[in-house]
Length: 382
Image 1 (cartoon, rainbow, N blue to C red):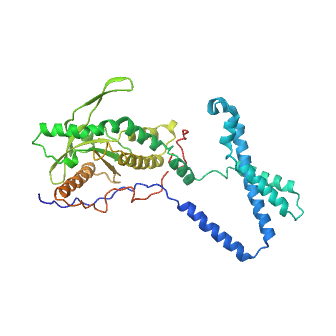
Image 2 (cartoon, rainbow, N blue to C red):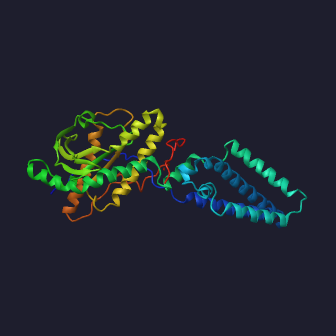
Image 3 (cartoon, rainbow, N blue to C red):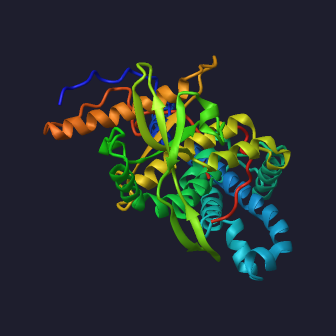
């Protein structure tokens, strides 16, 4: 079998990877620098210790006051949110076993080192006043990056829910049966070009969430052929629920025809609809970030699924700024050519070469936004 030229290079969309521990490492570096600066200044030890304990005590007072303010709201939701337990509500408003003891230790240390004549009570009152002013002015709100990281680490974002729902409720059902459907179709249509590496479900993930219900209207080089064998199951109370895929012919720039099962990732329609509905309070920027996170999460889920191995190909792309008539068909053909060359490499007993522009979210980086409790959809841009 002759080797064809490698597919044209393409500009892969920048899919974000999970945040690392660089922020914490930066904390340690800055901590070391501050400690070094303190040593260089040569401040007396007792004075330095008193200042440090004073600052620690002030911070703990702020945390306790903040928790108290939240508790003032939560006591009105004991039954609905905390199963009627005051102690459960208390534990959600305060970090368990930390702020109280730390404040006690800092206060005791400050008293032991106290020598400037300032009344201790006055110091705590002033510290409380400052902390309450900070809370009232909203100066302690977490930044957009902090909100993003917290929601991403806890897997509570909109995109995580959509990706898992799509996998559990659809892909986990249909993908293990796809190879059999493609084999049945290939036996019944021996005249059509067959490439076993393309016997997959090609899932389109437009990052702008613009999903066409009719692929032929999206690109005239994409033509419907037929439907593959249906899968019928009883699902969530519905008898004989039908799952099926459509087979399409894709015409490339040299008028060569390619055949594959292709469809959009339907949860993207939900992201699009949310961005159009005022009740969702979902901006265009948030939609883009959630679409990227949806792709990354779905990719991670499918890679860890043994039953879905080698039955899918995710095609993430960004629409060009200037409209291109056959952009979508070229994007699909690029992936089909990749699969075709992978099959040739296997047949020749060699390892397939992957161009540097192939999409791999583990190698790509971009700052993004992520989300046991429902999280509001607005995250101030993240």
